[in-house]
Image (cartoon, rainbow, N blue to C red):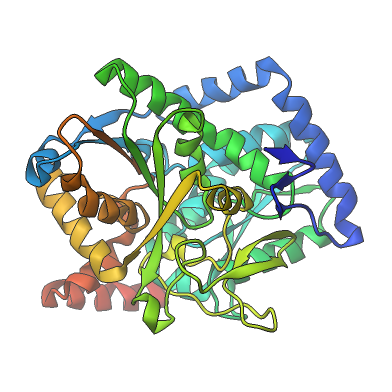
Length: 409
């Protein structure tokens, strides 16, 4: 699939000259590690002893009974240390940073899970750490900001642009240009210039490897469909990669926000609102106007409102290997509520997008079919957003009080 960082016509590395040597160094370090069998063993060892790998596969018995169709299984990436699949990528990149002899890491974050994971990795390995986060995302993800700072990271609010994920990425790249000698940029998703899409996908492939083994052990057959939410795309590629060579339908679910007609959404691959362009060092589908200027995006889930998408997923859409759908904010809250009530599980708002599409389709399949959902993160980080969405007066008073305390801290 890879041709010098390209996936079909997507990908590449569109870099200012000042960054070329740094990316070459990173690519060489990654390829050497990838070709060293001891590196993958070192990686899986630390993920099993420091995180929670292999994460379990949970049979959603009550949801299966509720919809009366396919058997529903959930891959529990929410049980990773720091609460999401993000730990897979950052721990792998941390091992690379050690190999390269660098002492400082920087990262961008939207939902905050990548920021917490990066700060955790930096504490574990003894790196200095700086996290860039849009001001809007800092407001709606206050618990994660708190933990990043407690872990020793400097969290810098991004006040430019729309003050969300794409702006945080821009700021992180600016930092890297100034501090290349001692700093590694721990990009959080399978986007950006080569080798980031390949590298992040490599570390996240641990999800799909495990899930395939687990479902075969449990059911002695492969699932009919595999679902995952899609922001940048790392959790989706991670679980999909385990089934690329199998006759399994793969479904990615994007953020329809307040509805496609509203223009307030983040659908790059499930609507016609995006077009192919080059930005932030790579070629993919972006939500952009006719002049190539990036549009504003919206999602109730801070981790899904990115303006671009992984070049790998763009290629998989063009080839027809992955089907893409979209879920609105309202549908996400409803699906989250049902999952909590029926299974006692609290998916992250990002992950709940995948549940929406499963709930639309499960009853159309037979009881002999199997559905697999990647629950990429847990929802405790979203407590303020979820409480506000449920419009509970007691909770809204609590939220207001906590927000005031946070700003005065």
